[in-house]
Length: 367
Ligand code: PMP
Image (cartoon, rainbow, N blue to C red):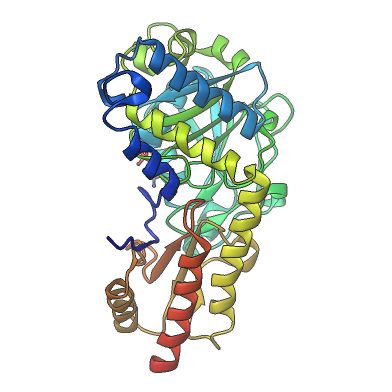
C-alpha cells in the first residue's frame, strides 16, 4: 500500500518506524500476551512505558528535576482553561500575547476565569491578519502579572517566534508557553519556562494526550477545591496516574521520542526542519509573486508554511491537483485562506521535495 505525502496540520504524519513497531507489538506487548490498549494502567508494563517516556522527554528537552512532567487529557484546549483556573491570581491578572487564532482561543478561555491583559500591538496585528509576532518594544509587560502566556507557533497563521527571540517576562513573572505545534522541533531551554504545554498530535504522537511540563514551585499556587482533574497538584502528586491516563497515546509518544533519539536528537531534528522549511519558502520566494507567503519573513513558521496564490480559483485547483497526486492536507485554514503545508518532525524530506517539484510544475502551467 502506498503512503501519501502527509501535510496535515494535526493529527499529522507519524514516523514510519514508529508505526511499524506499534504494529509489531500490537497483539502481544513484550510478552504480556495483550496489546498496550489492554494493559492495566497500574501494571508493571505500563509503569515502564510511562516512566520511560518521561525519562526520554526529560533528557531530550533538558527538563530539570524540579519540574513535573504530566501526561493529561483534554487537549491543549483544556489547558487554556486549566492553567487560568490554577494560576490567575484572585486579586490580579495575567498577560497574554495575541499572535493569532490559538493565542486568541487561550485568551477567551482565560477570560472566563479571571482578569486578562492582552498585550503586544494586538489591533495592528489583527489588521494584518496576524502575519508576524510583536517586537519586544511592543510588549507592555506587567511586572506584577500572575504569568505571561504566549504561543510559540501559530498553527493556523503560520507564524513562529524565533528560538532566540521568544518573549522574556519581567523578573519573577512565570512564563507559560503553548508549544502545541513546535514542541520538540528544536532544542529547548526548558528552564526559561515556568510551564510549557502541547497537545501531542503534531510532533509527539497521536491525539489524546497532552504534555504539560511545570516548575514545581507553581504547584504551591494551585487553589484548593478545584475539580481534581483540573488540579495540577493532584495530577503531579499522582504522577499522571490519579485516574486512567490515555495509555495507548502515551505509549506512542514514547516510541516517537525513541525515534527522535535514534535519528540524532533535537539538534538533528532542528537541522532537518530548517532545511525542509527553507526549501518550501524558497519555492515561494522564487515564484515571481505567483506564490505569496502569508507570514512576514522574520516571523515565518518552520512548521506551518501558509501561502496564497493569485486567485481563489487557482488555490482550489492547487489543492485539488496536489491531492490527486498524493500530496494530502495542503488546503489552508479558512481564516487565512490559501494553502498550508505542515512540515512537522515526522514529515520526510522526500515529501518536501515532491511538494517543491509540484509547486514548480503548477507555476509553469498556471503562472
Ligand atoms: N494550540 C495550538 C497552537 C494548536 O495548534 C492547537 C490545535 N491545532 C491547539 C492549541 C488546540 O489543541 P487541541 O485540539 O489539542 O485542544
